[in-house]
Length: 387
Ligand code: SAH
Image (cartoon, rainbow, N blue to C red; front, top):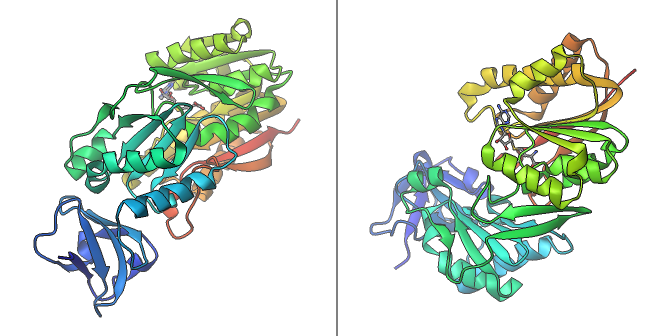
């Protein structure tokens, strides 16, 4: 029996956007299984698409296809194959599947050499872990699959979050190559699925700008930016990070790349340390500011912008003339315009003129879907302080 979800009249956003909220739904046929497939129809009973349903969260259905096709193992294989093909030629660690942006809403897959880290975000995807892993292996060959479900999502969706090897165990750590830089990834440890893959393209681009300069890597995590800059010939690098695990990873990566002698890792709060460096009159030729999301919700926006402005103001003051600042926000709720406005205000307060070298965004393996603005979240500016 097919399960059907009928949309309310006028709630047609589902034709272009995969998210259906409870408020969009007129009715759902009886006995639809939580996590099961539903066929979505509009108020006039016309076919809209097919997706996975969960009666528990407000976001109750995510559409997987707008074509009248079965969601079966062949479907998963086709979808995964096109996601993998879209990343062809990307070396090192790579995000193979990025949820909505790959028409696989609720699934994230990152590849670290012989390991695939699988993250399910919806009940429907969580129930299909084995099927998804089998389809993935049919495309990329034998990989060890590590499950790293998001706790918040699991609670919201009502499934048991998986954390560990799906079946056969793989290596507990992997060294990946990101251009000339080698980075150690602890499988199942660290933030995200191990690395901030969304910053890979920016690390490759910004790192070389550190050549011949003193570098300040603020919110360094495992010192990815600093390693790139030091390998490119930076004279020194100071890494600021407050998480113990990340600091240990930073020390490992600096040693792995043979640049530890020119680097210093500081276990400090970035806000305090920026203020202290400013008071001490220190100067740097390249500063990277890559903070965690300060605005987790819309209501936190004002406070977040104050926080961003504080660190940007300090960083601008720490820039030597001709120095370069790469500043980022990964808060979805902070728009590119608001972010740029904040940096403009900070530069005015610092009495500095900044030239925009380039806008920055998330790595190409985190594509943006135009109809799903939520897929665009990382924004950055590459700026040069005028003399
Ligand atoms: N630039 C990194 C990613 C940074 S993610 C990379 O390319 O890999 C943000 C980092 O900021 C996290 O590692 C987090 O532990 C750290 N962090 C969060 N709040 C902090 C604070 N107040 N002071 C210092 N570090 C902080």
